[in-house]
Length: 216
Image (tube, rainbow, N blue to C red; front, side, top):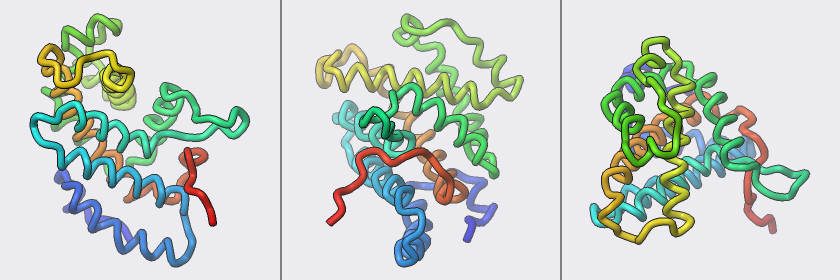
């Protein structure tokens, strides 16, 4: 069962995506199919729903939950080392696979729709101190969407790391602009990513599941 193309043309809400996924999830659960990916998707929904419930004053909490939601999709386990694959490596592999799996052009449509926001992330003065200068307009003009998404999420990852590692005061007014831009970016990208995964990627190998639930 695939989502209708008329639905794919417009951005879908988290609630709509959840309702579209539920009957398929239940069918796969009964058939014991795609269990690791069902867990990934379930975890992503719970974190993204938590992010959606955050009040305006809880921007730090919202961004942390948003990153957990998208991380539930991209994180993968290194069985040889007994720990997760490094985030940067796992994220790069996920972006490549996501774009390849996106047969409906959801990611590209999202980035085009949010072009002003994307440009603001590349032009953000705080982020510019940590990354080489990139001509995002040229990348867009050349259709280098995988590269745009990869660079965009690298910037989001840095902002998340600053919060997660206690590198900013909780609720600080100093970082509100970059946090708002990052949160808006993660909102758009996470919705696009989960839509691609539930529409086309539910049966794909996204790597070994991180932290599988305990089996009784």
